[in-house]
Length: 228
Picture 1 (cartoon, rainbow, N blue to C red):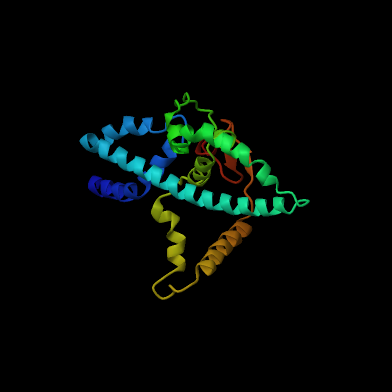
Picture 2: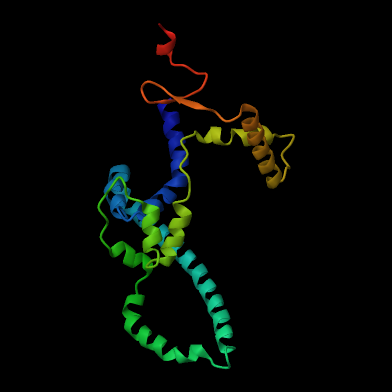
């Protein structure tokens, strides 16, 4: 039994540990420090290899997002220049060309480091149970615009407490060997309709407060109340 549990854990861990590692790095309370602390406990002598692999994954993901961001900025900048050049016959962008050169001269040294480098060089924040990581990225995302986009996508992934097999059991009932060519939109519509009809049939549950301040659905009673 234990060996089967370990095999299942390794199966899913090999798929999601990269995403979980990136999510930890994007937490300003931990960053790479938490990997450097726990990986030696998990991987032993091969921990340095795993840490380097995680760093490569973070930088690779950052470069992908950065390339997409650069393309969007260039397109929007070209449209802005076209609009400015048509304003009263005056090319406003040319008036700020000297300013751009002035700023670039002062920021060449800082531009040699990426957002990710600057983010990782900063000290980690103190751990706090009430820390709002999404609020932090919303506020500090101006300083790290590319990392904010990554955090928006990675940290939005829900963590389910339901077993993986149970989460996909509905799809298994809809798609069988005799009915396996349904379009994905059709499958989604069937699953949503099934959930909506079930909820409409059962109706919204009403809850009452018990003696120990717990919420309990109406019609259900504790075993202590039944035994008198």
